[in-house]
Every structure is written in C-alpha cells, then in structure tokens.
Length: 549
Ligand SMILES: Cc1cc2nc3c(=O)[nH]c(=O)nc-3n(C[C@H](O)[C@H](O)[C@H](O)COP(=O)(O)OP(=O)(O)OC[C@H]3O[C@@H](n4cnc5c(N)ncnc54)[C@H](O)[C@@H]3O)c2cc1C
Image (cartoon, rainbow, N blue to C red; front, side):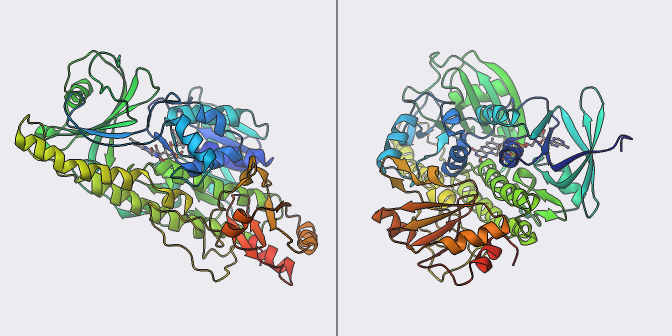
C-alpha cells in the first residue's frame, strides 16, 4: 500500500461500465461519498448491448436521465422490427413488427402498448447509454470519478475495506479506506476472483447460433450501397447453411454491429469483412472499426453476491448469453437494489438485514434471468435451416414458408418479455412483508400488473401525470381514497431517521391495481408492504423493511 494516509470514502465502486456507473450515480445522488474506478480511460468504444429494457428506462426516468438516453440511437421513426433473412440481399423469411421510438411512446402514453410502463423498451447501443451515464456521474460532487485507474488490490479488514488504485497511464497510486466495495468489474471480475467466489450454472453449451465461439464486428458502411434490406428493421438475422449472424444498426446512419457464430471447421473464422459480406450476400465497401471474439452459451451466476463488506453486481455476478438482452439490464437492477441499501446503512437508518437482503433478492433474479436467456438461445440457436433455404425453387419456397412462423413466434418469445422485466418480484425477501395474496405466474411474455408485496410497483397514469414521478427518493406511502390517518407511521419513521413521504391518490383504476388502501413503496419502487389500515406497531413494520428487526 502507498505510504500516505488512505483517502476515506464511504464506498469504492470498481468498474465503470453501465452497472458501476449506475451504482455510483445512485450513491452519489444520495450524497454518499464514493470513488468510481475504471481501468479504461473512456467509456466503451465497442458496442455490445442494444436493448435497454423498460425497467432500466424506468430507473433512468427516476434518475432524470430517461429523456437524454431516449434521444440517442436510431431515428424517431426507425421501426424496431425483428427481421429474418437468408442473406441481407437474399430472401426475407419472416418479420416481427415492433414500433418505432415515436410510436412506442405514443402507445405508452395511450396505455395501448405491449408494456405496462411509461417507459417502453429502448433500442439503443450501450455506447450511447454509457456516454450519458458518464456525463451524469461526472456531474455529481460526491463521486470521485477516476477513469484510467485500476483497482489493484483490496482487503476486507472487518470494520472497513482498504484498497489500492493505480493510474493506468502514469503509474501513480492512491490508497483508499471505505465502508464498502462494490465489484462491478465485468465478466472477468478480479474482485470475484479475490473473494474466491465461483460461478455456478451452465457453460460451454454449443448451438449453431448463440452457443460457442462468436465474433462481433463494429463497422462503417454506406447503407445505400445496395447491401442492406430496403424495409428497415432493428435486428436483421441471417440464417443460411454458410453462416448464422445478426446485423444491428447502431446510429441509424452508417455504423453497424455484426455478430456471427463461428461454428467449426469451414464455418469457422474468416476475416471480419469477409464474414460481413457473406452475411449480406454482397460485396460492398466497408471499414472495420473494432472486432472482438466472445463466447455464447453461458448461464452462470456467482454462488454468492457478497462476502463481508464486498459485493458483486452486473457481469461480475452473472454471465448471460445475450438473447433477450438481459445481461446489462439485470446488472443495472442489481446496482439499483444495492445502492439504496448501502446508502441507508451508511446514512444510519438502515439495519444490517438490509445489506443481507441484497443477495437474498438479487441472486434468485440472476438465476431466473440467465435461465430465461438460455431458453431463448435454445430457441433461436437451434432454428432448423434446411439446405434448400436459399433456392429459387418450389423446395426453397417451401423451406422459407416453413421457417416463417417459427422465426416470428420466436421473435415474440424473445423480445416481447414484459413478464421478465416488469414482473420481477422480491416476494420472500426478509425485508418484504407478505400479505398472503396469490402472485401471478412468472411467465416471460406476460405481465399482470399487481402490487403483491415484493412486486415492482405497477405503473399508473394519474390525470396528466405518472405515479412514478410523484414517488419520493426514500420510502413513499401511497394512500388511496379515504385511507386512515398515517401519522403513527410518520412518527415511527421520524424516530428512526427513515426518509418517508406520502402521496394521496384519488383514482379508482390505480386503487384496483394496488388492491389496498395503503401501500408502502421502497426507494427502488418495489412494494414493501400493503394493507387497508396501519399495523398496530408501525415501528415493527418499519424495522422489518429497513432490515433492523
Ligand atoms: C454481443 C453482445 C450483446 C449484448 N446485448 C445486450 C443487450 O442487448 N442487453 C443487455 O442487457 N445486455 C447485453 N449484453 C451484455 C452487456 O453488454 C453486459 O452485461 C454489460 O456490459 C455488463 O456491464 P457491467 O458494467 O457489469 O460490466 P462491463 O461492461 O464489462 O464493465 C466493467 C468495467 O470494469 C472495468 N474493470 C475491470 N477490472 C477493473 C479493475 N480492476 N479496476 C477498474 N476497472 C476495472 C472494465 O474495463 C469495464 O470498463 C450483450 C453482450 C454482448 C457480448
């Protein structure tokens, strides 16, 4: 460790990808002093995620960032269809229509969309999301943002964590002492390795697509050069006997991401430009910006999300096959869940049970979501592609006609997944008070709005506004109609320093969905408790939800 006295912060966030930046933003907005270390000097330059979930957009809305992120990516009227081709210049096999950004927002406003949320999914590259998050975190005075700095080592001393960070360029060092460390350092997490935590689950699954060696190329090309299908889409999947691949427009202009399965033998690696031209079925000028090998076929979850004062979040805690677009979105939900709890404990009103509840709530979601992603990968990865698929013949037409319903049903299965992102629940958590109500079944494609304890607080439109925008930064008590006086709850909250605000709602539809006169919502917008009257011991209730009982 360096000789100088360590710098004292409340939290160290190791890793400045999307998950680490969200963790730092959540902590920083609550005034928690923390340092964000990222070994790369910039945000990502090679695009990975393209699907920002409805739930992530809701978090960004709460953080005041949704509009800025929503403005990035494809143009307002670019459809977000899933389209399946033999090759881009070959036959279109099938298409699953999805709304453009403009349409999706109109539908969300009217309540007619497929997502019961004011924030429908947003099809936008991780490149742009990270750029917006970086601006937001840079603006927070309580966060010391150190890009180009690597976490070299750390030690959990029992009453604090000490750590050493190194400047990746100049070699300078800083020693830190903190209450907590969050490892958001990605798939190869050094924090996870140092804690001796294993990944458990499925690895090495081989499929024709999305299972085994993959190659991702970020490239630039003129879309009017005759290689791109006329009818625009968000994802252009390629299925033929030579190559299985995927084209995704990144900026709506001339930048694209190309993802190909490398297969084995003759189907294996070619130089990136050749693979792109093989998928397009055309020879056209292009410039490779960056390219990366990666491996699909993982559904792995860390056996533990915490050891002592050190936590794991994001890819450090779980590894997905990217079908369904869930790795980053699940990681962002981890960071949101953890940050308010750490802030509560550091702020003196959260109990130790709050910290334990992070793993209790998020580990099952990691297992659930990697499982869903793996089933999506089985579905698209094993799609049967006959030898005749590209033929201009009766056999070719029959092969394409047979595949059409399969790819379109698959597209619905993989991409209309409100059950996964909006239906997640922390029922069974030690800091959630059950009320005996039966929860809707956990199905990926179906979300039944409900406020069963543990559920994400369901969306409600109130006149011209949105319920979420009226919730406070701490806990919020919703009271419907003539709900009883909540003064005893506020007195108990005051006595514990627990931040509590209230929102009175006079709306029969919202009351029906929430199904109780009083509902206590957590800072991460999950339902902690509900009832038609206050419990006799309000303090006991609050001690439960703040992890202090
Ligand atoms: C082709 C592809 C498509 C994908 N599509 C989607 C999608 O549509 N939706 C989705 O949700 N997910 C998707 N994902 C997954 C998503 O990209 C990842 O889940 C996401 O990047 C994880 O974010 P993270 O912050 O946990 O980790 P990372 O993005 O890996 O960030 C970790 C950061 O920590 C830094 N770091 C590492 N070690 C240290 C250290 N010792 N000190 C300091 N810094 C360190 C790294 O340099 C990096 O900047 C996709 C992935 C791939 C490969």
